[in-house]
Image 1: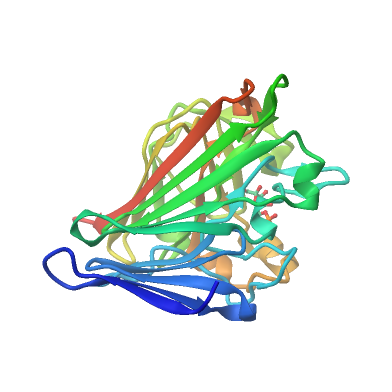
Image 2: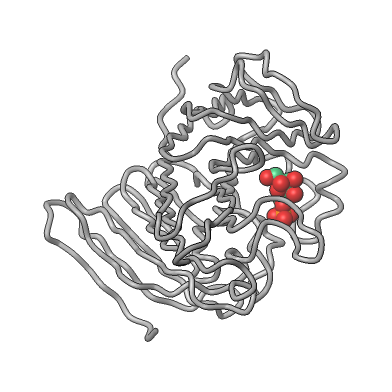
Length: 301
Ligand code: TA6
């Protein structure tokens, strides 16, 4: 992919622009600017590392200690977790899609100045050892951030069991001051207590220690209320039955080489997908689509 630029002025107002550049680790990136926002997407992992509305702090958290290299996931932004979630003996953590470069298939300018980039997961040695599937991922940048992950079972006669998750890291002003709303009454697996099954009793989940919970059988929108940044972040989904809420807190933060010791103070993961009890199985030639819309607004009062 040659460095270069695309621009669209097919709408009134400021032009939208896409630049193909070399990012950190000499990895190729797309830099997108729209009338509302700016974004950065690495081809490595089809990984969105930045989304920022022009008049707001960044929506996504990025660790300053992140690696940017083949075979390693980027720490922060939106890791694409596929085709499994969690740890698998001999195979590693959170699948292989986030560790390899995806192919950029198309960049399109939409109505009003939105920009869409479509990626396809290529043949890789790890994928060859897994039932055959095709994965396409479309990122749409506008006043909000749209994500669409489509997985197709390429087998002629075998079902495809898999998990998918868009593992989003959000930037917050002070994690101890936020509330995560929308999961009350949901059953969850508490990974901090050996996957104990519990039910969420709080209207707003507060974070004052390590939190690592897989909320099951829920497609409800989730909001992060951030009084420090005066912002409300909203996560809306289609095709997602699981929401994961994670903050590593102090001890785990210190154990992660690609995560600053104090990074836990200004991030929370609210992840959307189909994991654990909600893992998917699709028939031959069937496609499963996971869609996530991330938006933000001022927090009133
Ligand atoms: O989504 C929560 C989680 O499964 C945590 O258990 C923690 O492992 C986190 O993902 C990050 O995983 P990673 O492999 O990116 O370090």
